[in-house]
Length: 402
Image 1 (cartoon, rainbow, N blue to C red):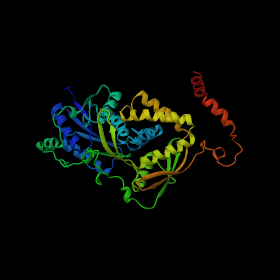
Image 2: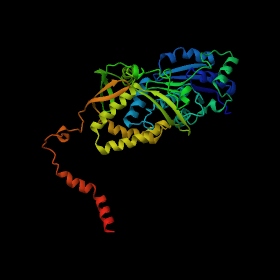
Image 3: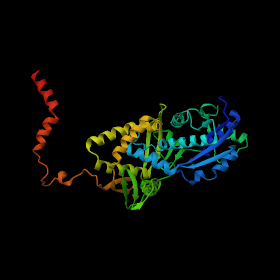
Image 4: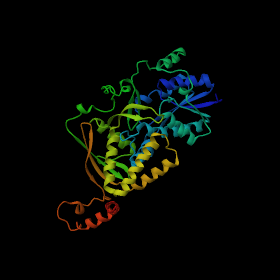
């Protein structure tokens, strides 16, 4: 083991990180400073966190309010890229990791730490996301990943470890699901979800109303964007975080944003997860609807290709890379045209765009109408089609000649 004197631990107050604090002190003989990030997971998870960390053996616990930074600097740039991993996952956990890791490094610099620590397992994606960020931002700091070092393998092992040291915990051996929440979403894994043939029970979902029990009356929400940024919800000016929080409340009440998927983890295995992203689902649909109004065919095609690439960049934990910066910059060049107003109907688990308008719209009723018009000569299409398909015509003539 590398000798370290002071370690900053990404701390959640859960069973894993509660056990990590005494384990670090015993095995590295070092000072442990806990760091918790408020990324919108809710007051319940943050309440009493500092006291708990210190009672577990930490010398200090820093809690950073990252909500606005998270939404403005990580979520919205991702929305502008159009990134959706494997066609469904809106990247909620992935987007939170770089902002947390960056703040953790900043705390480490502040307190003069020589090591960073996380509680991610050796099976998941998050170990790559955290350590990829650490390596990009603080390659001089040691990284400790207890799940890859200690001999504990189960929840029962961790509980026994704490009990032997008379360290109190509210965790129990009967925890069913592994959950991760932030301002964008909540994820659910484990329990019956480990069997892909098992339909999720009602107790899986915690953020949204069951669509079958949602109101019978649809609700419409009005969103305004300026150069790719959300500025108003139902006529009220909002900050990025405020807008997302309001959309979460509105959409969750109608059961919007549930998905149940089997995805490819970066480490090679497949995993099954259920995700609730109510406000995010509305935002992504609204943004895309406005984008299709203002981008021409070639530009939209390029943005769609960019989206596929960026979905893997984000999922794989490569935020702090030149490729990520280039893709975000490319998306920003398109986002400057995304200004306008969108109306989304919320009903029984669905978010449907019903109205859209933009001062930058390329849609022209004069050209698109099925009625009579004075701007489009349909005879011109013949020459266009002959040139557009000329290579196919030449190939066919050559084949006939042979």
